[in-house]
Image (tube, one colour):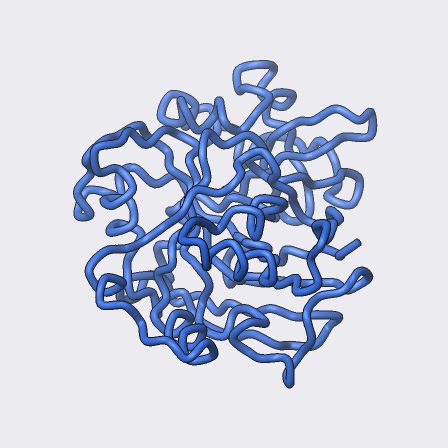
Length: 301
């Protein structure tokens, strides 16, 4: 299923799923048996699954997709971690700065915590942060944790995944570069915005694409309609199982926690270079697309 969070015509935030350009308000179509928010659904998904299955083909749609405003499909995750799991991105970025990839990158899947309170969704505006003149997008695949767990082995991690989404880790490159010279960060270079969506696809829907350590999903990014980035999720150096193992080592993961894959190779302006495209400016429109999930579109203001 493809789950969403949306604002209805009366300005109320609701949750549900989409099918064939129709929106199903899950609390409404279930007569209150399903919750009105996605985090609660994820926390108790196994209990709610029989109800969802019974409604998937029988429920009448609540709205047409064009009648609602999408938000981040999971607007209130407990935490957001972002990894750096694509080798080509690391190689490209390091080459531009004249630095070698550290040996440690090949030993552990590294991540940082980002701001879980600034999530936005499809068609929402993104404000360039104060002092930033080098705004960038990052084309990533996001994984949603569906079950509480600690010290999870990579081989068992599939049981802890709820689904996947498109993940845009907006980056203020000039702010990021300055603060990371100090030895901490990224912080202000990243904490102003993260966009996910347009939906969260349950993991069963992507199983047919499974390939290698990831999925055979084409990932693209366009700026103002121009194709700039193209990669594939099957090129992950570290699988989401390995990422979950690392994130849960000595720490409990909770339903709704989000793990970003890190940027796919060529998936940001930093890698492409200014001769290909300048940094993002107010008025620019960024559109990310991943096979099986959809398109995530935002305008810079």
